[in-house]
Amino acid sequence: MTLSLLKSSSKPLLERCASDLSTKLRLKYQPYYHSVESQDGPHVMVKGRRMLMMSSNEYLGLSSHLKVKQASLDAIKVWGTSPCGSRLANGSRQYHDELESALADFLGVEACHVFSAGYLACMASLSTLLHRGDALMVDKSIHSALWDGALLSNASIERFNHENLPELETLLASLPENQAKAIAVDGVYSMEGHIASLPKIVDLAQKYRALVIVDDAHGFGVLGREGRGTVDHHQLTGQVEVMTGSFSKALASTGGFIAGSREIIEYLRSNCRQIIFSAALPASQAVAALTALRVMQEEPEHRQRLLDNANHYRSGLRELGVDFWDSPTPGHPIVLADKEKCYRVWSHLWEQGFFTVMAISPGVPAGKDLIRTAVTALHTSEQIDLFLAALRTALKKIGFVSHPKA
Image (cartoon, rainbow, N blue to C red):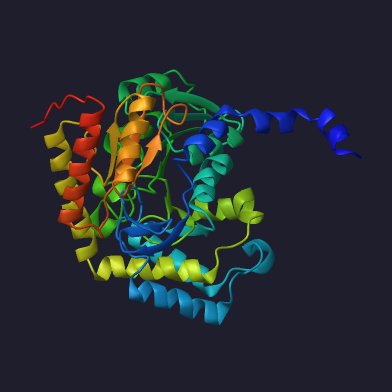
């Protein structure tokens, strides 16, 4: 078949890909998918240029910790690079059991199951536990992994505005008393940086007989005693039925987990497609996560440095008078509410050697366009101050009027 004939018989799905405006704009301005050639602490090399990373989720800075790296290398020597199949088909490995046991003990729950991706764990929690005819209440700002799980569940989805708990109660009160129902929230919302109001959510769940599912990808390792997460932060251990989390943030690895009662975990192992049909977590990543979990407990200075850096950064943002949605966590949005302003500020920061990421509509709601930044334990106060100075200059260039906050 000739090339001209192929073109003349173009297929609608191919045309959709070729004409997508978001892709064309991304390729034109190239704000994402930059190739990082090397990494040194909080610095990365991009096209031979040393840049300070200001958007990483590596909160505790453990991916370069000698104990974590050595444990991962040793695991490959013993187990190879992959189990090459699902745990149902090929069996679990000892390192899966050790990691799950350690996580369950740390979180104060009966059991845990680990996945090869945090996204899979998060999605699986909703897609498996809820069915058609059930009711699911979700905060509108939940992570896309929870959204995907909600859609796959075929449950009736009821959305409430971000952290609007009176609205949540109205929705719950409108449902039949005996209908199976659940409430799904993020422990820490990755874009807003907000901590979920779990005490009130748990109270409502008890009152209306709803399961509580918390994705704590950005709270685990940051909040609570020794980094036990948002549930522990609110002193609610044992009162939240399902927690999910990611290894790619504080634990400096790849993968994720679901934690809860033994009954829930065994039910998932019998019914969850993301478990049954997905390849198991490789040894190198499981052992890295387990070692990072131990380091997190044995060396509290990493988490303390993270919290100190976050406080220092917040103080600087308040002085600049920017809207960062009063985030009390290490992730801080610089909310500019305008696509063009976001691009101009991001571009200036990039030119000055600072790696950040834009989140603009439709990725975020229109009028909430922002630049997401995050501090880690790897940053120094001096580096944070340099970034704040560059941000001040960038904001001045777009005519930003400062309104310092107390």
